[in-house]
Image (cartoon, rainbow, N blue to C red; front, side, top):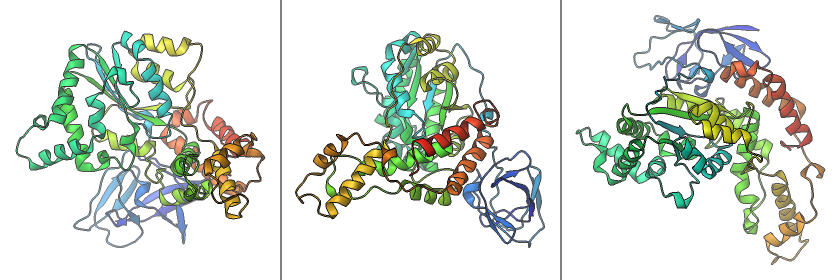
Amino acid sequence: LSVGILCAISFQSFLTVRVNKDGGSLTYEGDFVFSLLPRLENNTVILSSSDFPSHFAVQSTTNRLDKRRTFGKATYENKEKNDVTATPHSLDLSSSTNQTHDDKKPTFVIHVGPSKTQTSTLQIDLRNMYEVLKKDNYAYLGVRRLKKHGVSQIHTSFVHNPCLRKMTEIYKSNNGTSVRVLPCWDRVHQEIQKWRKQNTSIIMSEEIVSNKESPLWRSDVFQTFTTALKETLGDEWNIVVVVGYRRYGEWILSTAKQYYGRGCADPSKKWNVGFCHNTWKIIKKWMNQRRDGSAKNFYWTPAVVRHWRQAFSNVKVLNTHAPGHVTEKFVCDILTDAPHTCQHTRTRSELPRAVNVRSSIDAALNNLAVAAREKGLFPEDTKRKSVLDEATKYDIKFQDLPLVCPSRDELEKLLNRSIALEQTILPDFHHSPLGEKTHRDEFWYVTDVKKGFC
C-alpha cells in the first residue's frame, strides 16, 4: 500500500512523505529511513514526535503551502513564522562516523549502556581483567571498579549531580570563568592528566547516564559537561563513545522485568510490596507510549546514539547479538588496540556468568504467596521471606505453572516491530546469517519455551 501524505512541519504542523506500508511497518524513501508501527486514521498515517530523530510533532493538513523543502526524497511545505524545522538523522547506526585512530594517542572510551544491554556483565568482566588490561595500557575506571584500585574522579564526574549543576551555572554565566575553579572538576582534570602522562587509555562505563533520571539528559547540563570534557581532553586523546544494542523484543521484556521486578521479587521486602505487575500489560503500554523503542525511564539504543552524537562524532554500536562474548566483542572490535586483552577473552577456558538475569519464577512465587495470604492460608504474622524460601524448595519451573499468555497476533506485532527496527538500525546485520531468521527463532524460543511474556 503506497500512501501520499501532505503535511507541513513545525512543532505542530505537517509533512509530505510517500511511504510503503509493508508488514505493519513504514519505510520512508530517501536518505531518511525509519521503520515503525503507525496509527492509521481515514487512510492518513498519524505520526508522533517520537517517530523522528529530530523530535518534531507531525499531524495532517492541506493548507498553507508556500515554502517547499526536500526531506530525503520526500517534500514538506510550511509557512508558519515561528516554525522550527530540523534535518533528521539517518537511524542506520552501523554508519556511525569513525574518526581516524592515532596510535600515538591514548584512547578515552565512554561506554554509556544503555541499561539491559549486558552492561553489568561487561563491567564486572572488565573490572576483573584489570591486570590484563594494564598490559595493553588500559585502565578500567567505570562502575563496579574494585576498591583496591581506588575511586575514579572521572567516573564520579559523570554521575555527581552537585558538580554538574555548578558547572552548568558557570557556563550559563558566560563570564569566561573556567570550570576548573570547581574543586570537583579540577580533580577530574588532574586525573586525566595523570593517565595522559602515563600514556594509559581509559575505559569509563556507566549506564546510568542513559537513563531519564540522569542530569546528562538535560540539554544544558549535557552541553556543559561534554564541552568541559572535550576541552580537558583537548586533541591529545582518541575519543570513542560506545552504545550497546539488544534487539527490541528482548530489551523491552528485560527492562519490564527489571523495572517492576526489583521490589516485588525481593524476598527481604515486606508483605506490603503487593503483587508483581503483569509484564505483558507493561510492555503493551510502553509500545503505545513510545514509538522510538524507549521504555519508562530507560532509553533504548537509537535514542542514546542520537544523544551522544550531538557531542561526539565517533559513536560505535556494540551489537550484543554478533558472535562472541560481549567482552570479547568490546575489547577486540571496539578497542582494536588491546591485543593482549583480546587474546585473553578468546582463549580463556571459562566464560563469566551473565549477571542481573531476572527469573520469572520469583515474581510468580511472590504473586502466589500474596494471594495465599489474602485468602488466609497461613497466619498473618508469617514472614514473607519464610513463605518464599519454602516455596523455592519445591524447584517449581515457571513454565509448569498455569499461565496466561499474550495471543499469537499480539506477539507477532512485537516481533515485527523488533525486526523492522533492526532492519533500520543495523541493515547489514539484519541481512546476515545471524539476522532475521535468528531474530525470529530466538524470539519464539523465549515465547514458546521459556514463556517469557506470560
